[in-house]
Image (cartoon, rainbow, N blue to C red; front, side):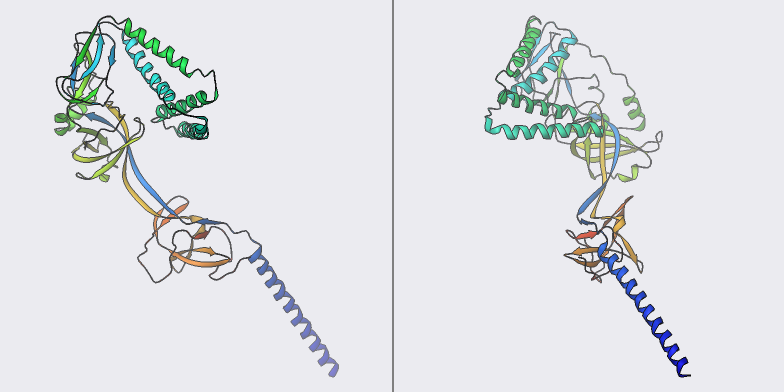
Length: 411
């Protein structure tokens, strides 16, 4: 009996030892998993999500065509968009010059302007690092535009790059071709004008904003037509062939900075807009120029199922080209919040939360989701509930990791 009792006690001790070893192995395994895993974090910051409507619209403004007795090339003494007063000289119009010469003159003026700005920069070698930085910035901006298909600003960005490269050439190359190129292009321009024959100097008989380009629609796409737009008149206007201009037109004058922009939006997009509200219109083919415009009126578009919107503006951005038909992106809504990767979000008791890292300590933070993206959330900066500690900005959100809990210490 005594022998049997000893045997039973030994078996119990062995079983207890085995259980202890198993518990130790289990603890060591989980401790190793706690301190051996790689933790990734991202700093919390504010991100905005915007909704835009992409559409095409038409410029309506009051414009008066300017006529000359001569029909040839014109040497303009004021730039497009310049404010002129009664009696100001606008252009010297020659008696001859083919349309190709007029087009070439515009191209030459553009290139000569870049070259002149290059030579007038008055730089020294001390400015070379800044010029190199300009070249780098312009180059990468241009490549990004090409990759994104952003054609609206390519021409201006290419001119910026050319301007900086010309500066670099003048600073570093004794035989820089910049001055010679300027001389050649200027001579070519002078030759075109010289072959244009006799000249008439044209002045304006009233004040306004001058533009050298015309399209034949000036009489039809005016403010009165925009303010009284109907579904019928809208479709008649946009389907109209460009009228032939009778007479020798060398430019046009607009007596006011007021203009209208009329667009058509779909049935799905029409509810974004409200008469009297202001919207940011980005003219994508005009250097991505953004102009705040007020929605003045709207007309039901039964044919298209949406609406015809008439926007009002009273500003003329420098360098803006008033082409009749233009593509725009209109920002219609925007929401801002703290950006949180979807992989960082956990749920508990119906609440959403994340874990952050403060030093080596894991802490719990509640979040209030206000926007859901494909692989991320935007969460409120000012949550409505104050019963828990919520995520703020400039905190390190733990994006991945297991066995996370409030108060856990990481090596």
